Image (cartoon, rainbow, N blue to C red):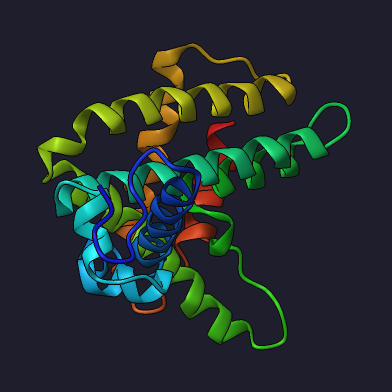
Length: 207
């Protein structure tokens, strides 16, 4: 049944609107963390009526799950495209930077004329990503999705390492990820944080 000007679930237009809300929620999650994903904010960003968020999603939790899946799968797709774009084997520098892109996000790269401002923005991007990981741990309804996404990320990281002639088993991969995670968390509290540089240094040593 149509409610107001909201298209029914299952129709082509209804699915487009649901996808628009999902994409909007994903953008808010990516830029502002879990607290940014709210019914009104999502509807406004998608340019749809507020009632559409509760029509297409049973609860705010369902909307958050859709946002996490949308954002994470987008990041995984970008990572696979990065790997596919590199011809032949990866050299050591390419390997480290590609691993860091998957674990910290390509937004964590620092460069350009306004290097200091870029560093601040890059650090904020890393902080938001880690807040998302920690925040997911406080939301049990996200656990099944996060476990599934971790399997996909681990597979991508394993492929990246194999392309550089550095095959790893699951245990070694978890150690590398834990090394990066611990280094980043420690680097984030420094007076002039540069978490990607700190993670790069430990990865270069570990590899």
